[in-house]
Amino acid sequence: MKWLAWTLCALTTVASATSTQQSVRPYAVTGDAIEKSLTGQAGDAKRGAELIQQRHKSLCVLCHSGPFPEPHLQGTLAPDLTGIGERLSAGQLRLRIVDMKRLNPASIMPTYYGVVPNDRNTRVADAWRDKPVLTAEEIEDLVAYLQTLRR
Amino acid sequence: MLRLALLGALVVAAVGAVADIAPKDRRSGFEFMSPQTQAMQSDETSNPGMLWVADGERLWGESRGSAGKSCASCHDDAVDSMRGVAARYPAFDEETKRPIDLMSRIDQCRAKRQGAPSLTQQSDELLALTAYVAYQSRNMPIAPPDDPRLQPFRDNGRDWFNRRLGQLQLSCASCHDERWGARLGGSVIPQGHPTGYPLYRLEWQTVGSLQRRLRGCLVGVRAQPFDFGAPEFVDIELFLMERARGLPMETPAVRP
Image (cartoon, rainbow over all chains, first blue to last red; front, side, top):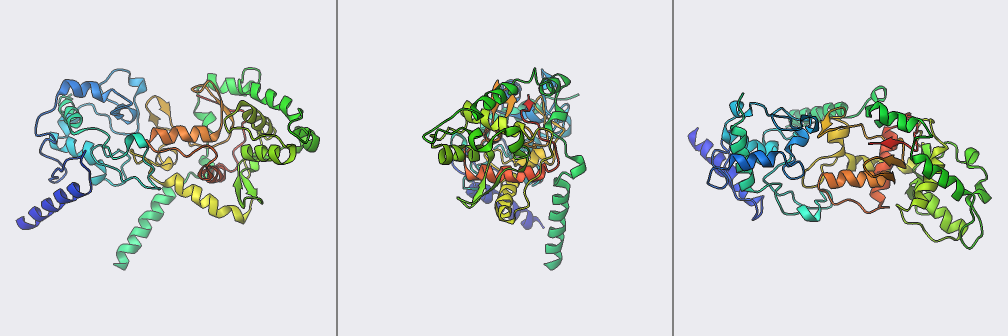
């Protein structure tokens, strides 16, 4: 049984390495988590707190509410992030930001760390082509910040 | 394997059934607005879109182009001749063998019958004429024509509506079929029915077309928007009008 787990782990790693481009580094998924930091280092929770409110960059508050300023400008399309640091581990938070669709293909949460192949049906805009929504560093900052959200 | 395929078909059918908005649940964007914005639309003396309608009425009677004709030279009083027309558009165009929207139809008429130069898609003159013509259908139910030649184009529009687009990989249906009534940022998501175009959008501070509105959503999901006048836009409008069948026309609507 152990060999199967290892094979699966290796396969997913290879899959993420081949399906992405230079701007996205490979990562390994274990269960419903990415245990290792995408950068190899811990993120900065303070920068993450600023980033989560940048509605045109991180987009988070367009769908999620949480303990942030201006609650009337927060969306109701996704779970409230209050106390999320108690419910999910760093690794679980990381995978959900990186690629929520791996856990739920019907999710509307964008894949933040991946590159959408551009073709006549996806029509990725010039400015966003071949790029992930956020960098590995930015995602680590968000993970660090979200871990601080406890009731 | 067959069992798997059947299960897959069932799941797809179930998702499809959930996604479509039942006719009894169809609601105009008007119903999602604040009472103040509703009042602004309903009272024609406060509706800023009426300025474009008034402009359109004037243009309707003015001669243009080498033929020395106005719209009224052939169509007489729009109050009679244009009644209900906008509620049936887009229609099949015999010349190009594909659907044409009201705006392009008006522009085509100018070029062919009046011998006047083509107007750009978002020009105030074309928006005003279109608003004036569409105003003649106000409060009439949307009634797409039963023309089988339109069906492949409508299907194409439906495919675009359901397709995940752009870097954010969201479809029109993700929000407007499946999550209407919820809030995106500070704004309530409406069902996305094109009941009131051209309309006055407070965000734009002017009157604009459905295509302008659709471009806004495409840019929002970080997709390359179609050009103004693109056939894909007409196909999407064709699908949206079928999806909004029965809802009353509101041109010139006001939206936030």
